[in-house]
Figure 1 (cartoon, rainbow, N blue to C red):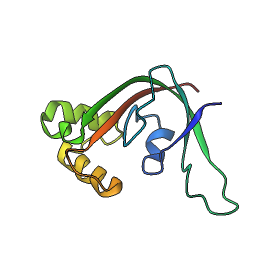
Figure 2: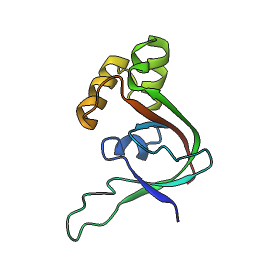
Figure 3: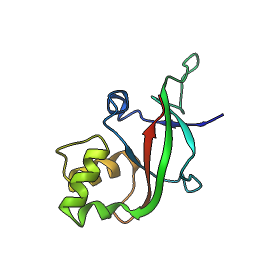
Length: 119
């Protein structure tokens, strides 16, 4: 059975299929070809709450990079922000948002996961 992956901050982007890349802390053992269940929220559910699945995805590529790679080139960050589901966001804005939610710093190594939709 596929592992669950949460998209609580980008649920709309998963629903409308505009997101094809996600950055995570951890997820070091993930590899291309792995299938995952995209969910709204997977952990911290209150009693009686159930996992809401958004669909299945297949990992296309997994790389590891410092978060601040998004700050090094405006061309790279523009494309990455779009694939993350945030067209129009700058690399700086993305890094600030990620650090706020994940409580990390710009030098933190993140797992960049590129995926495709299966359904």
